[in-house]
Structures are given as C-alpha cells and as structure tokens.
Image 1 (cartoon, one colour):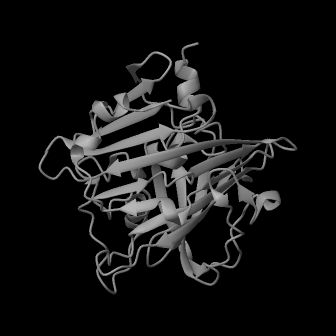
Image 2 (cartoon, rainbow, N blue to C red):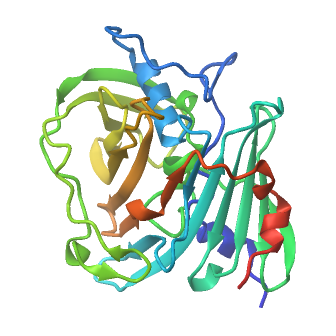
Length: 325
C-alpha cells in the first residue's frame, strides 16, 4: 500500500533540523551570526538568536548523524503505561552553499525501521525567507519522489512529545523574549527511567540520566508566543551562558506547567572548531504532563560526523533514488 501524506508527516524523525529564521523584518539568522564580543551582555533577543544558531548547527559546514554499522540514532516514544515504539534514522545536513546565493541549506533523512523504512526526505531551505521550503520524499513502495507541503508547527514530530516547532520550525520572531536572570543549573536532566543505561536496538547502550551540566551558569529566557489561541502561552528555557545550549525548556498554559523538554548537549571543542556553539545533541527527553506521554531521541557519539568532504551533489534527488528498502 502507498504511504499516505499523513503517515509521512507523522513519522518524520529528524526531518529538517535547519530552517531559515528572520531576526527581524530585515535580517535572518544564518552562519554569519557572530558570537557575542568578550564582556558583552546579550539581551533576550540576542540570546534567542544564539540558541537558534546552536540548534541549527550553523557552526558547521555540514553535520551528519550517520549510520555506522548497525548503530544509528533512534527516537523512542511511549504512551503512559504503554509499550515503546522506536524509529531509526540517519540524517545529513549541508550548510555549505556560499557559492550559491539562493540556497541556505539542504537536509537529507533516511529511515531504517518501522513504517518509514526505506523512505528518504530531502528538505531545501532558501536564502529568501519569503520562499517556502521544498520537501521531497522518496516513497519506496512507488519508487517515486513526491513533494509535500510544510507541516504545522504544532504537529507531532515523529509521533512524539516534540512538535515540529520544537525541533525546527519555530523562529525567534514567533515569540517575544524576556531575560529573567541567571543562576546555576540545579537539577539533572530527565530520562526514560526504565531504559536508563540499558542496551537498545540500533542505539546500543542508552544514556544514563545526565548530570554533567549541574552548576553551569544558565540564562533564564522567557519566550511568549505571538500566535493566538496557541497550545502554550509561554516557555522558559535554561540556556548556557557560554555555549547557548538550551538544556531545559518548560512550557506553560494558563499558568500551569504542561510539558518539559531536556537536551543533553556535547561540545565539539577541537582546534578546527573553536566556536563554543559547535555543539551536538547526545539525547532529547520530553514529557507531556497532561498525557504522561514520554519521548527519547538518542544520538550515539560514534554516529556524529561534521565538516566532512562530502560533495554537495550528495544532497540531491539522485541520492534519494538510490535508497534501498
């Protein structure tokens, strides 16, 4: 049976981790965003831009979460008192389009398990922030490529606690931002407790609860949505004052805490990449307090690759057509 558009959107894991976001009506966040000058105290809007830069891997020419043998990234979803459902994926992002004035980035995802096995997706971002993104999907059952419209920000990402807004589509100007102070991070990050440290298909040994960031100084950034009747009113993020890694985000509706997303970040701190924002994700953990739904996205360090010599021709329809089911 052909895979439906709804199925494709619902099961998209690491579909498009890079999207073009305007800083205001005249400027956009991109690879050119400078790190704050030494001694400078960034305001709330600047912090939001820096967080966006880090989350979209603009510190790298290209960034891959690749397949290495049988090891891959995996997204695990579990409803309250339910069984886990997992999706394995590899994903390749390219920001290296300095010689092309029209392209901002291209992002390729290839799925290796579940209903999406053998499916590939290629997302193209343009420098013109008024131009829609291109979503091309390779459907293995049809052996054809189809184009699909951009998902809504509040759509579930891979059927998880995370939304497409959380992962890729929310822009800094979609919210108003307020700096509510600085403090040390006082608690460890969340994890699926029953899976902590256990071996799991595709990912190998799952991470244990991360306490590596305890006592790091973080900004408190309050971001209030500009959308009317939205699923949250505001969110508070705890952002590393040096790397701009957002370790924790708390979502509130009508004054009530409704969702938590924790991110365990690692730093690529080499002579080649001295930018403090050159980060990679170790895992994401999400909990919806209204439903009890939990999600865990795990990225083993061995599958992370950056600034490779892969040619730009890799990020084309030709690669999609080579995918094997």
